[in-house]
Image 1 (spheres, rainbow, N blue to C red):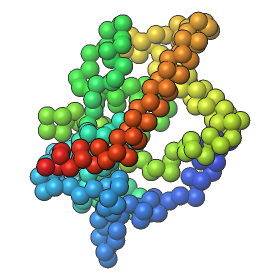
Image 2 (cartoon, helix red, strand yellow; image 1 turned 90 degrees about the vertical axis):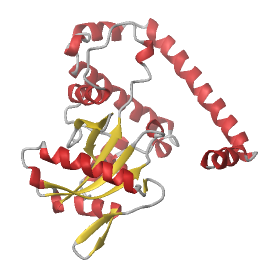
Image 3 (cartoon, rainbow, N blue to C red; image 1 turned 180 degrees about the horizontal axis):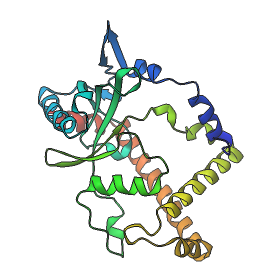
Length: 264
């Protein structure tokens, strides 16, 4: 907080005034002393009886594995939709009563874990992970000074999933605002790059990864920079082309027709 600047400093300042109670009020409804998840038809959708029963079994088993099983009790569950990387994956938001949580409640995020899209590009062998969720959780622990609260790699039926405390959307930077000012955006991207570099250094040497000296030596070379910029620009053009194709299909009614056919 003390060394942050620009948009990140503004984010830290705003977080000082946010309470856990206000976050709960934004995500739940209250009926007397009881709370339920707020279904907004956007980020939180109704869960079927089968899905609810599945989550109930999971949470009962998870609570039983904790040092104080009685501290955790599932109150409500909903399907969660958020981010392009989660589309099509099984994901839930859960309201639980937790004796150690502020206000006595906590919101948990349960997300199916899949293989990284970069795995096919690797030229070196990956460490042996018990599951994809374990890979994600352990690497976060290596790279982040303070990982997300309640971070666990869990088995959800036959699926590998990551369980963590739900992160408020307003904990993130809105790039749309920063893009209006090139200097502001440049400063933000510079800070994000430095944070990523420190995360790489923090995790260096773990599970057979490159040591800090190797990373520093690589960073001092220049040939890879132009290549990376070319790849980034090519990807940007591809995303633009995909968006244009989608927009044309949507305007022609093809997207609605596809949804109707899938629903039938």
